[in-house]
Image (cartoon, rainbow, N blue to C red; front, side):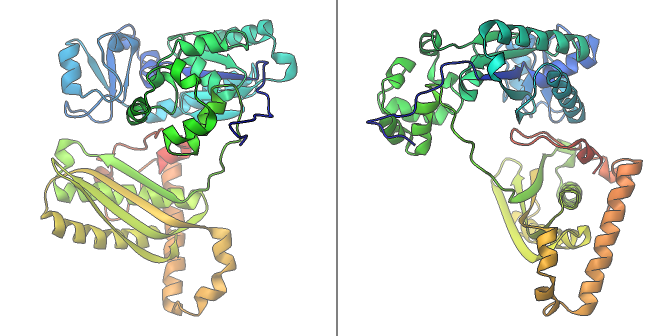
Length: 432
């Protein structure tokens, strides 16, 4: 990182990134799938109860002030005609994959940033204002024609990926904003601090405490001062981002595989909540096998209805065996229920961590041979083969064809794979 006193690197002045951000994505997909929802205020919800929150809202609903996170009981007061739609995550992933294929017909996708955001690096011959405008318009026409006219996007173009993302929020819905070296400074000053990715409510308060309330004051700071305001390297990085620099992405490695679920009211008694915990464990183990990892630890946490979150965890020899994890889950659940005195459960979270790639584990097999009895090793091998066989049956005949410790009817109580902000599930996961 360059110092605050001298910045030998010059930020790029040409247009290098095109960023695509889909508008009210979940709600738009629902409107595309169901003509009865078009032009109507809709909220996409995780469960069918007024005690939940909206995970997406159509632009018609946003006009009433409804947004992601708005409690449904409040949303219905704000908009008496609100239509609540149960989230269909499988559809959102399917549309996501179709969208990637469509954009690739116009320009290669460099980075998939989320379920509804993609970034495309521009080649030298694609960086003129005329060429990039034509590319953006052709993407919009292709999406309307081949994906659906209700699945709209805003496109931002800028010298850096970060600023291209910022540009997508400058005109919604269905916008096109191009930040050039000539207009970039002026356009950024029009923004509020919260318009910048990376500045949420808490960070805005921190920045305000430093006497900074608008973009003009923020842009006057030097890199080291911004680092001090943020209290981390991210403040200094933000200085460079706002001036069009592209910084290398940090490398990340997978450390866990897990699933959580907010329970509908009828599933909150402990006995029924345990069924959900079992199903989440099976999903996590199946995903672990598909990704070719073993896990050496399982953690379980629950949120009590109208109460706190509590959790516990336990370790084991690295495994990908559903039978093993279900046995460990039973031990953890018994311990938690003793602590909660069997109160109703609002949310369940199961995580497998301490991940080891299976190929690395096989290299270490000789070390384990000395401590694992032959009978135990034989049982583990058998259970892993059975687990893989169950995966294949569920992939072939449909999710929940085979379950451990549950009947197929009990499995239906679990609503399926969800899309997280940081992870887009594979289509295979909807069959696990």
